[in-house]
Image 1: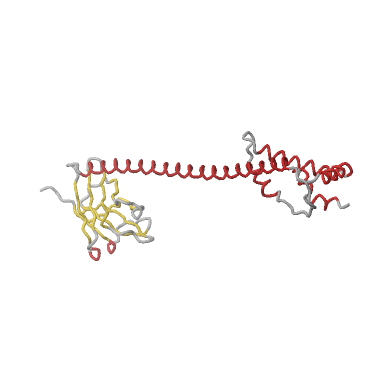
Image 2: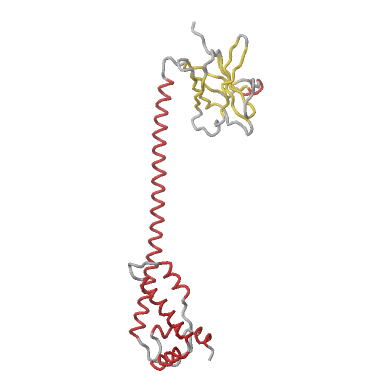
Length: 264
């Protein structure tokens, strides 16, 4: 007798499920007494069924194990003569499988629900961040308006120069705290490898002092920049310079210039 072929035929699974005739059950029982391999296989099948039934219990919801059992224990087709079935055992076996399938379906739906809840939570957090950002922007805007409306602020318009006549900007100078607010909305984005550089100028003799480069110009939305300025400025200018800035303005790239009006 080929023991391995007999075990692989699938008849032992039917024996455990109670789907064989009394004669076939007796035959397998006798083979189990003669062949330890067959008895061992029957015991392993019964253990697998017990685990599957336990997995169906609410106290032992091992869904991964249920899924594995459902996917790997595929029924085998066996040519058997007509026999009397043990329908009570068969019904219990089928009910266990149906319950396991129902639990697996519930797992899938619970997983989808959990993903939906995570998505909602992420969207909620993102909305909260947007609200906080809007509050910050509102507070910043209010502060900026208060600064620009201060009667001590000096406003200096910067007009376009030469080939850049369409360019414009405006400087709001607060001498009390040595800062300027540069509104550079009238300048285009800086090309790759270039930056806008702001200059404080004295006119007699003409002497430029760099107030720094605006490295985040292209990514800034409102184009208003706060810049320190402790100089006795008589004019302000903006030129386009290589990244890192220049020691003095490139006159051919001087886009805007504005003179500080003196009191009469």
